[in-house]
Image 1 (cartoon, one colour):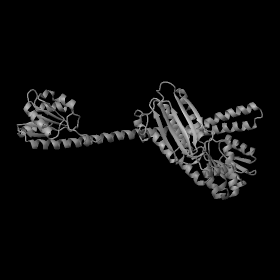
Image 2 (tube, one colour):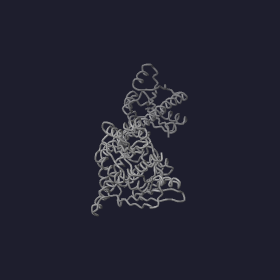
Image 3 (tube, one colour):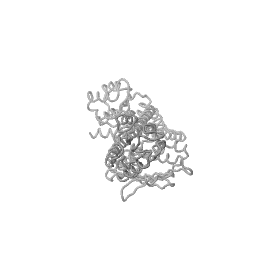
Image 4 (cartoon, rainbow, N blue to C red):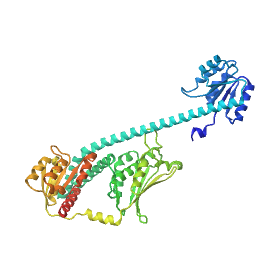
Length: 525
C-alpha cells in the first residue's frame, strides 16, 4: 500500500483559548480531516506530538507558560533531522517582526486571527499535500536503501560462494592426479591379483578412491560455470552422489537419511551437474529446517516412475516444522527467504525450479505445519528412440591391435594408462610432454594420441595445433585428458577441436571405452 492510498493526516491543534480550539476542530471536521488532537496547555505539546506523530501542527503564538516560539523549539527536539513537518502559526500579530521570529523558530506558514474558513482549509490542504509528497519520497528512499542493502548482501554472498567454489575447485584439481593413480592401480591390482584376498583389498581401495573421486567431481560441479549440457543420466546415481556429499554433515547433526529407490527408472537426457545442484539444495534445505526440531530427524528420499506420464520422480521429505500455507508459493520467488539476514540469498529454490523447468519438469511442494515438508521433482524420461541410439553409441566395436602414443608429464599416470592399453592388446609409447611427442611422431606413425592438456615445454593444445599443421591425417585420432574443468577458455578451445575429452580423475574403463570408440570412428572415417 502506498503513502498516497494510506495517508490519513493527523493534525495537532495547540491554543490556550478553548473557543479557538473548538472552532478549528469544527473547520477541520467539516473539511474531512477527522484525526485531530488538541490541547490548551502548551506544556503538553511536545509529548502529545511525540505520541501522536502529527502530520501538521496548528499553533497559537501568544500563550501562557510557553509561547509558540518555545513550543516550536520543543517540537523540533522530537523531529528527525530533515523531516518536513508543517507548523502553521496562529497569531493576531501580523507584523513583519513577529513573522520573522516565527520563521526563525521553525514556522511554515501563518494564519491571522480572526480566521477566514476558506483560507484555513486552503492553507492546510496545500501543506498536507506537501507533507504527503515528503512521506512518499521517504518511503521510496527507504525502499531503495533496502533494495541496495539486499542486493549488496546478495553480491557479497555470491562472491563468497564463488570464492569458496574456486578454493574447493583448486583443492580438488590438485587431488586429480593422485586420485587417478590410486584408482588406476587398484583397478589393475584387482585384475591381476591371483590371491583372492588381494583382489578383495584392491576392490576396497578402489571403492574408497571412487568415493573420493565422486566428492571431488561434486565440488567441481558446484563451482563450474558453463552452459547446461544434456547427457545420458542415471537419476539414482545423482541421488546417491548428492547424499554422499552431505553425508557427514547430516550424520553429525543426528539426521537419519532413508532411501527407497526404484530399480526400473528410465534414463534421463539431462545435465547431471545441474540435477546434482538441485538435489543438494533440497537436501540442505531439509537439513536446515530440522536443525532446531525436537524428536526424530529424518529425510526420506524416494524415486519412482510414472509410466502413464513418462515422468521420473524424486520426492525429498523431512520431519521438520513445515511451511505455513501463506508462504508456500513464495518460497520459489527470487530473493524470498525466511532465514536471518546474511544466512541466505533466497535464490536457492528459485534456481532449483528454473533448472527443473529447463529440463521440461516440475518442482512442487506439499507441507503441513508440525509434520514436515515434501519436495517433488518430476522429469521427463528419454524416448525409446534416444535410448536405442545411446545404447548403440555406448558399445563401441572391438578393434584390432593399434599403436598408441600416451602424452602426460605425470609419469605414474602415463605408465598406468600405457599398462591398461597393453592389457587391451595395444602397443603403448609414452612421452613426457608435447615436444617429446612431436619428435616421436616425426619418427613413426601412430594410430591414436592420448594427450594431457597441461604440460611443461609444450602443452596438449599446442601439440594439437602442431599435429594439425604437420600431421593433418592425425587430427581425428586425438583424445584429450584434462583436470582444468574451471578454465572456460580452455574448455571452449577443446570443444572446438571436436576431440573427445576425458576429465581427471578418471576410471580406466572410461579411457578404454573412449579409445575403442575413437579408433572405431577413425577407421570408419
